[in-house]
Image 1: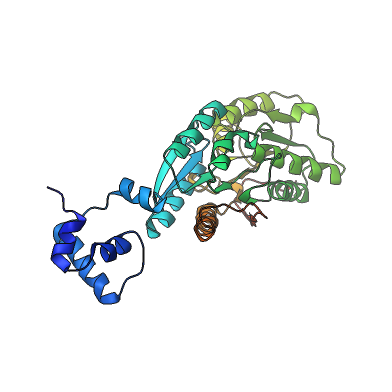
Image 2 (image 1 turned 90 degrees about the vertical axis):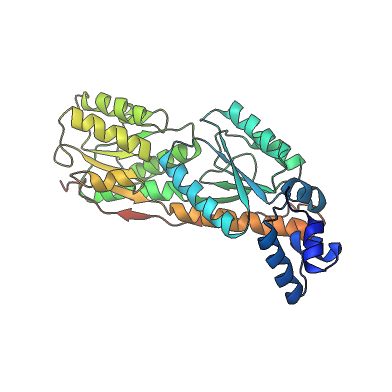
Length: 339
């Protein structure tokens, strides 16, 4: 039979009030803390999280909504979020939208019903309406990697436009004038990176023929099919900007299949310094995002909001939002040729 709080009382001689206070996160005298911890270990006492949640109005659980759990970028961020939450004694509920905003809506309602203390979201939907159940319930939300146009929320992002423009300027500096882009304009990061690409080209006075813009999804399939189409153009570009890691994979697959050498035949700059860029015979030049920092700062800001809510008698203040923009660096590979 599982040990109960009364068993701890009998073991320690302390009052139920003192034991309950400590088990629910309160401060007790150091000597009482030692007695309770020793009894918990000896009796193998397990805290009833559901019961404690009813008392404290806290489940010590954070919900994490992601656009695609199979995405490598997402996986690294989830790993870091889990590490940070574990250090703080919090658990994590992961809800995968599989790039479907309807499923994302259901996921948010699921997490709200589970009474999570906060939500970290790598969103699919372009509108904040998807998070309305969380707002109504007074659950703090932090966005990672993406933002909404219709509502300002706490967020951790990079300057996607600046990063993409920097990649294009690097290509221009190396003599390239005919530059194509494979992107996903329906998604926040893809749209921002496309705008950065266009602004750099316009500033340099370089034209962008419509056949040089390949718009679709941030996926390997899109990168693969777009690259094959690009290679069939009569006036082929000398360089290509790939706007995310999945697209990078497709680009390299297509180039290898067509026996096109890079950077000799076409120069390539992508996003995210993951396994691909390091195992290729010709290392890719990529914009490197601080993926671990996304997770670290996301948890940090969410915990700040959860604590503020506790201090304000369970009411979440909406005055002012924290928007952190992390820096990127260009990882210099060997996939850009000077012409």
